[in-house]
Image (cartoon, rainbow, N blue to C red; front, top):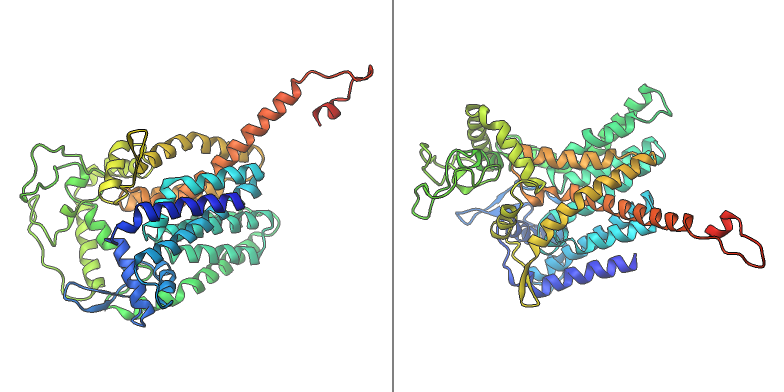
Length: 463
């Protein structure tokens, strides 16, 4: 564990010093960073709109901003680097929890491999140094896995409640964790054969109450703070709009610098992704006139944009299967992985590079190819657990949650982080199992040695 923590902390510290400290927060990074300052200053969960006014917001769930606000409460810790250091600490803790999960499922070797992979996998440390909520989400998912296998080992109401609370916390980091209640907790509770169906349903009810209690303060605040009802987030409408238009459906090339469609660009360049061209408030292309920004708070705008996006979906149902396949292929980096690397570098600003022997290494490329190499190994790890009669339901649930997230939004690597945590655990399990199988094979084929005319018993030879 000390090795895992030391390596994880060192990788993240080097990434901050060499690269991230020179990047000013932008996009979601700037949102979380600035909201943390407002929160520490007593303004609550707000952001500054284009008119310079501080207005209430629920575009993102609250947990990550609240954690970053701890830095702003300490006098003298000015600047985004301190927030990055805190987030790097969270990422280091996530690597440690991942190691614990693999160790408990298999062996210390599995824990060591999984922990070290979590320490060095760029798809994790990018989040840990870039001020994005996915860093805290990785830690939350690690805790969900710990609670899940605690429940499997001893299915009790208390442990179901603990798992529900862990899922609730993850939901306050990224709203799609809500899927895990249905995909993970309910099946784990219902599969327990040590009690009646009535008791199992009661256990689900207690778990639902526990998760509701964790999320209730945020949901109640949102229900009374805005003109339209909002629960966990008010950002879904914006996501639905920017992912549903001609370029993301492969029907038109993107808009060029002059504001006109670039005839030289492929029509499916953004298929399954997002583009600012889909924002009907800012452009007038693809036969649609630019629409004025709706009058009202962000929930009014969210409802309008959700309506625009869903209307486009209904008008293009024939293209939806292709779009969904592209989104899922993108989030798993199995479709156009090279383009995924380029998009992550450009749009997500994952542009960290290192010169090695005169060649420039792009760390996003390392992340993608390492992920693709891990997929068959993780599958083998799942088979190992299945053959050992250890349920793989938590890992299946994480994979399904990531897939559903892409299907209803767009395929972006950052949204896969929960599944990445599960993949790393399974890689640790598979690697340890392969090593142990190799040791057993070598021991079985070792020639017995005679000592004073006595051949040792097989057990002693193995020892």
